[in-house]
Image (tube, rainbow, N blue to C red; front, side):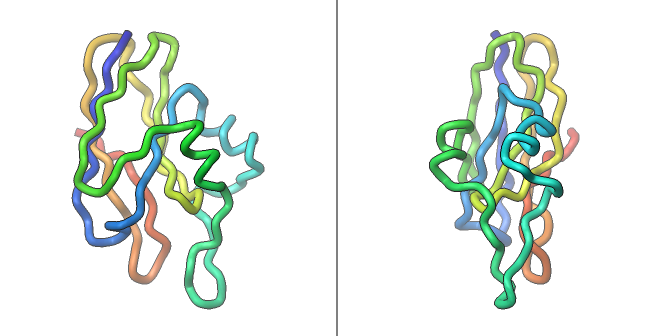
Length: 124
């Protein structure tokens, strides 16, 4: 059993948008399962993100994390990666998890205002 603590930095961009922490499936497998080619969703003519994954699916596959919050995940030893998704289906970078013990990760938001907001794991 391993423990992963994820702290989501408080950011104004996407402040009200929850992210989902996805473990147990590699990012490329996730993208293939839902027919996603790119990491980021597209915009409509009004500049709003076009959703490509429904919230029910994200709730079934991942753990929600709100702006400025910290989540502690207790994962099986065979889980080796983590990535995050927005409710619109924009994906973060994928992080390889350590084999054992406790790992601390920081999740931030990139983009916003002029481009779509998306999650990103910062290296510590």
